[in-house]
Length: 576
Image (cartoon, rainbow, N blue to C red):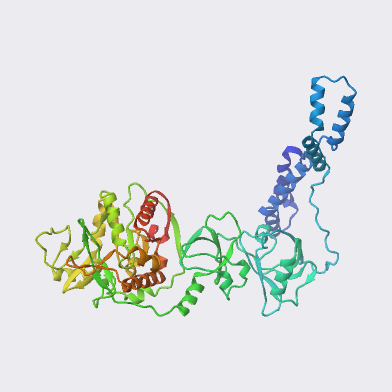
């Protein structure tokens, strides 16, 4: 057999011995089953890792650095005393001056303290009361610092035993590799836990400091290695574990806000996933409700959805035409391209929980992402679009709406509108060619999906202004929309900043501009709240239009980042 080497080659000595052992024992093994068992035992990767660690420690134990002396301060005093008896030249005077300085004496004192201290780890003694008959019992010691141990426990309903319910990925227990799901907990720091409730045991752990000793009976269930940790999701709701009565351990919960990107570390539990915030340096995961569990909870408590009628409105300013806009005051209702298949109520009844996402950066040869602007009537969305178009007419573009009304003398087909017959319009509606459409004074108006494609085909950023219920149908691989919600400020700020402004009423160019009324402000605030409550999970960015110039600059910065930086998008867009 090869001898165990030491020194610089020690990391291959015992390791090679273990690898060669089954082959050398083969002539002495009677059955193939026994030989297979030996290969499995001595070929275990964890055993090889432990051996390598042992040999490294053994090597460094012999080669560890030691101080040259332990009493530098005393030596310095002796040297100073000796030099006093010598003829004093300039070098001796300078050395004596240095040795007498307080900071040098302090440095030598610290050196001696460090040199004389033993830094080897001191482990607590093993308990004396270990039952020899319990050969399956494990004694585990974990050192507790400020972080939680990262494990939850529960009482087995059938046996009454306290068992480990889950191990939090990245936590102290997980990193130790010593505690596993299903392990039965017998003692904590010598305190029996059989008759205690999980809450009492958690209290014992909370009050414990330093090394904590666990006496456990290992679970016989083998754990399969997890392949998770590469899945990212976008949270579509706010979550605070302290307000969740269903969570098994509030301290283990992970709080997040709508729009946060979470990295899923484990989906072993069908009810409670383990996750951490994407990019968080802390490896420890926290509990969040699973998608299925959260959908069930939200579906049960979701209030009845309000679907309000909308009116068509539009404006024309400096050659710029507003795309299809809607107001709730008219008796006519707008339609979306999908209305023949799904009602608005059904569309908005989807329960928002999580959406799987992946990073995406637009490549130079790709079309620009569709930019969808959403906001209540009067919020200033149209003015922001106009400022964007004026800032770079070659880079930004808007759709040309369709209409069935007669063309006026000063209008050109395909510029202000695309003029088509009522029959053709209705045929296109049946063929789902409109993103949304409506009727005003016996004429149809609408925005077609081809008009969006036309802008994108010109290598321009298409600015599309639609009602929020339409957004979800535009979220496809083809358009990869980035949705921006233009939100009004507080009603006090509206009264202050819009007192001299005017709002356009009416769908067509004959619509009159009138000053904002208090009712307009109330409607704007209420409409924005409904939009955010029902469709907020579809918004990628929220910009408050308190000041038009500030809001425009924020919008422009957002556009620049959208074209140059990576953003999280639904996985389905890139794997369709």
